[in-house]
Length: 477
Image (cartoon, rainbow, N blue to C red; front, top):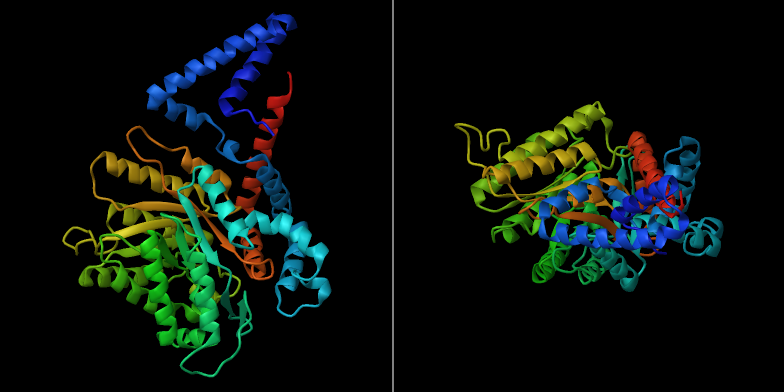
């Protein structure tokens, strides 16, 4: 389907208003010809004058770059997510089909009708593909839309539910193998993660959930220990492959039951691989945890003392429904304040004692801000650009949002290119795997929409507004 660009939309809308007031329909071809000439002139002028491009870009609707099919699917998904009376039963249904060993009626892989509905809606909205070909096509389409690359993850993890004191493994099946020299669960995780690495291009990022290694790994993490040597060897192999591809690795935050062990192995990996003046490995810091500022201060101290680059990925947090509530900030505002303080401090190279007057030097840090909060990411980008223009110290920064969510934020960032400055590096984070393997991931995305109802309503409004803008561009009045 042919879509008018925003420049064409504005010109044609103005044209129709003019024709209604002052001209006869018979002269429209001449007017259209002159309009096309003016548009070509504007295009040439914009190419010669980047400042004009900046003004034009900022005037465009951020969602104008979203393909119509994706826009319509997003409206459908957000129509459900923004209405509690639709979202609540949908969540219940997703929770049922995400449970292992379901009967035919609730099996996402075996029920053909259910599979077809889910694949065309929720799966395609949030996931990259069920195989390599589908995933690579999705990643290419994201780059074509202007994103720097894709953050890709393998759909297997273990979630610890503090309320029930139980673990649930998503993705492929696991077995409670007794400790030995070789574990089939770790090997399955290694194989799936290596397959993910092979889909990455230069600048893409691999997001890994280490609990996908199975019971032996999660047992070690729950005790704050390093995982079995087989898992460490697998991580070394994955790090080497990503370095060869000039891709990056994000170690995801997971349930707090496992997080201290995860951070221990992540720091060890950064010690080994983040010594070339940039971060190959990033650790994830959850701003909703009360302990995060002290944890980050400890890691900054280690990076400074041992001379490696700290990969700092900041998120608000995604395990509100399963982590112990007392560990989490009391209000959303507290979490927002914590997130913004970390982002601003890193961009100013002033966090606690590091970078402060009479304090310790600020270590080498690479920053990734993963957030759907428009105010947070736009403020961070403005601060980064201000410091670059003023030749003040700052750190490299990238931005990321989840595939299928907060497109207005993502495309809005892409429009913020300044004269003489590079465009913000914006990524979309997605997962790949079969529909059954991705069900836990899809359920968590739905829960995030439930927990961020106001943001979901705002996004739904923006999507409908963009659809209306496109529809009006076709109407001859």
